Image 1 (cartoon, one colour):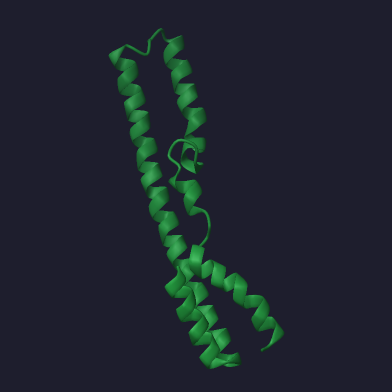
Image 2 (cartoon, one colour):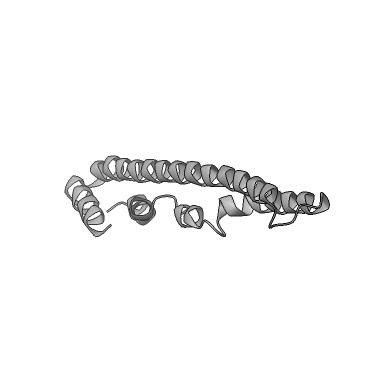
Length: 121
């Protein structure tokens, strides 16, 4: 088998199994990418409300924080959908690459490897 085929095959197989690898970080609601990007804004809002003399028990505080968290939740959902789509596209691209590259080198081995990878994922 061609040396470049042996080198490309493990990387493409891994991509076919796991996709981009960014999905676990995106799924972490309390410490993932969305939470990290919203943390400073949430802290700033809490500071501003405290400076205005609005305590955490005040209905205005609760309303402002609820509105902020609604925006964070929408961003989280959007991020998850985006990551799922990117994962799907990465897997689709890896499958296509494996088939095209492998078919040129050894058609039977390429299809057998692809089917085995799909069955194991």
